[in-house]
Image (cartoon, rainbow, N blue to C red; front, side, top):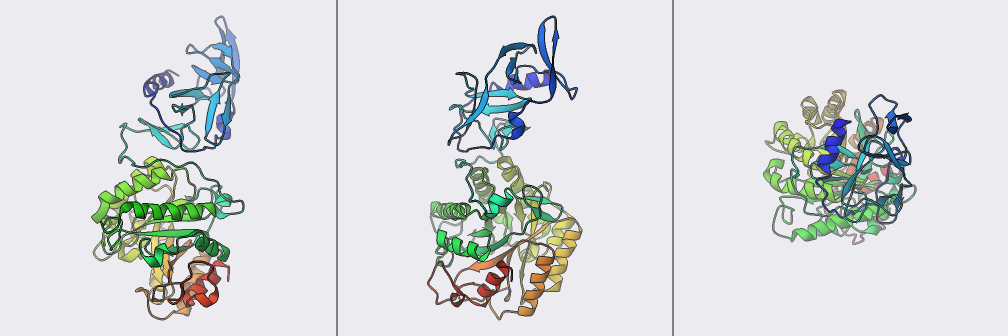
Length: 464
């Protein structure tokens, strides 16, 4: 009890103003009193906890206020209330502002407008999605300071994947729903978000078309090094940010998951642009920390001489930055040789393993049993694998479709309940593009608008 008193006294000094941008769910645990018993001595009534941990002190509990000495002081009509802006806590005409309060043995912080703060650091102290103080860091400053605002918790349409499954989690080698049921994400990747082949297909109707095929995930390919890349100066970064925001918004309104793909390719090694990556993931993990449907792919395809040691060093830098802002978003880590070697990652995994998966890519006309063996080895070692890019042609995006190999991959993926994303939603003149090169439509595609690859994956998404 003394320790709690010292913590409370210290954190109240912080009392700084915050604006709330989210509408949180107050957990059932927060609205129920903890188990305990009222007792009386010569000084008055006090409340002891049944778990033997002590007694209530400076706390609202069971409709009454227990003062700093641990004795009942007054009855109280406090309750949680909410509106479209957020949740607050009110007793009579009083409600906390710029203040921590303890309620049912948990600490909550309320901003200058009186609303509960969630998914945020208040100085050294972090409050989770229910607004409960859950962890403390050594410094009041974040690893990387976000330059964006948090968005409110969105709503997802009934019957959609996100509404049904909620915030995803990793259990063992499997991707699971919030309740622990195994799930399979079936996705399509955009082409580069700044180029016509990519950006023109980032629109609500395009995503609706994909959803009607059975797609539940959109991967937004944010190139880093190429012309128009996020780390170049060819295009205003605000344009790229707006395109990303639009893509996430369109998918969210449909209840689809979104993979935010830091698409390293010609830069080979993710450490080449690690400074930009730090800020990017600090900003986006903070901005979307209240979203259940955003996943972070922190390096698309480490390649050439990049080793797993290089990638691990990068991942062990970026993952803590994301975790400061979002405790449980799924993070996808690329692997060496253009993300073909999850087995190497499995032998020396990243430091923070919670809800982390390793990336594998394949192109069926080039890759076969060897690559499937690497995935099997990784899973046998306990490493979860997510196929964030695949197609049924050659690895260079061209050549003929290899249906025999494609069907072997399809069986392997379905047998192991692996999540997968097709490359790509574009009309480029290459075999991996889903849409015919002479098709100018940006939604509502029919089989006559699709290449062999597009038809194959459309059927697969639909269960055929």
